[in-house]
Length: 112
Image 1 (cartoon, one colour):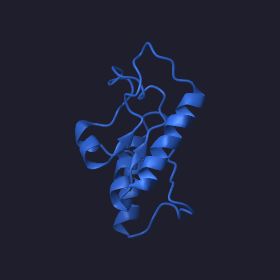
Image 2 (cartoon, rainbow, N blue to C red):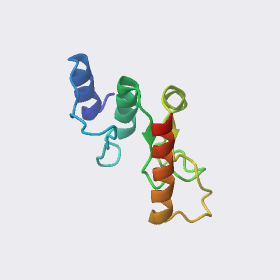
Image 3 (cartoon, rainbow, N blue to C red):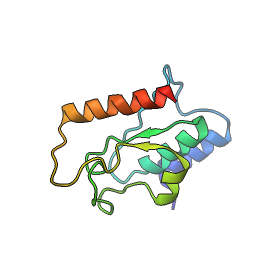
Image 4 (cartoon, rainbow, N blue to C red):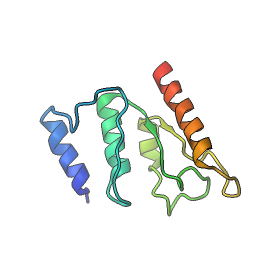
């Protein structure tokens, strides 16, 4: 079953409009847990030819696949994802290190 966000996205994209008018090439999608953000982000990235940089602290750890609602294998094939499975569960990842990794991922995307 599609989430409210996905249904809204279907309507918006089918009408050839965007949900937002981006001022830059960076779009940030936020929302509560289990609201359909990952699926919506994949759809947006497919529509605009973009890539995803994850900001979910649990998705960054290897082995936390079920509880973290990581993208499904099919979604990983269609759109480039960054910052998934970048640390073992025993490794620390603080906000400063996340910012460095995110900056590097965004720079890599922009360079492509």
